[in-house]
Length: 102
Image 1 (cartoon, one colour):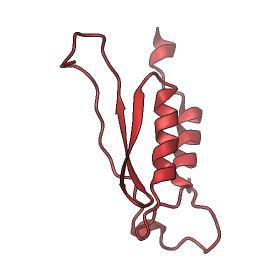
Image 2 (tube, rainbow, N blue to C red):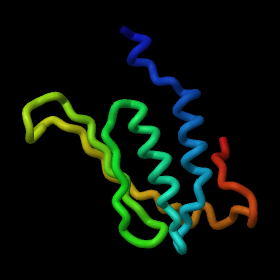
Image 3 (tube, rainbow, N blue to C red):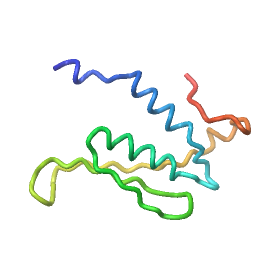
């Protein structure tokens, strides 16, 4: 049981590195590819995921993990976040991918 509760830090780091590699700086805020990556990732964990286009190159990712309760799912899980990278990434060298620094 304890192994199930221990986070897989290698997997978490790999997923985070892949997410940060998407250039979502604003403007132009090309978040759709990052949202698509997140949708595929959470779907692998059993979530139902969908993209909601909000503007050209911009999408929200909506994920839901149903708890098996009757319709209305008062204990379903929801998470909100933003995919835009801000100032900390403006020093990236042109042409180089974004990456985490450890």
